[in-house]
Structures are given as C-alpha cells and as structure tokens.
Image 1 (cartoon, rainbow, N blue to C red):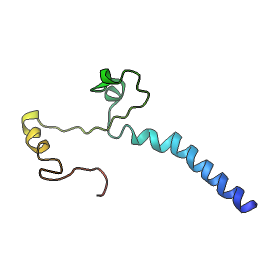
Image 2 (image 1 turned 120 degrees about the vertical axis):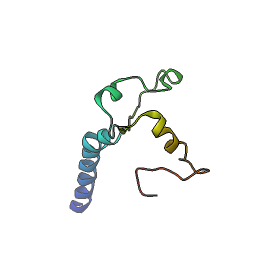
Image 3 (image 1 turned 180 degrees about the horizontal axis):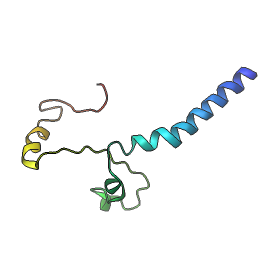
Length: 86
C-alpha cells in the first residue's frame, strides 16, 4: 500500500503544480497584460464563456509586410503552423 500511496501523492502533487504554475503560463504564451485583460475577438459570440487563453507574438513590422506571410499558412497553402513539433 505504501507504493500506491506514493504514486497517488506524486500524481496529486503533479496535478496541483500543473494547475498552479504550468497551465497559467501556457494559456497566455507571449501575451502582454493588456492582451490578456482586453476582450477577445468573438467574445460577443460566447458571452458566458468561462475559459480563455491569449497566445501572442509581437512583430516589429507594419501589417502590409506581415500579411503576405500570414496568408501562406494553412494545410491547403504553404503549410501548417504550430508552436510545437508536428
């Protein structure tokens, strides 16, 4: 029984650490305080939504230089985009 309790205790500790430290950082990856606090696009479509996340990146370039790169993204275009390994 001691081994079982150790496993349960370790799993519980891992869950608490994930919920308190890892997940909050994942749902606001790269976002500023303003981006996190501000309304999300489409928030009016789900007014009672209780979950949210803001992943962001700051690009030091004007929109007309960034847009041509963005339209290349996607499965039927230049390729998928992911911040993780595919």
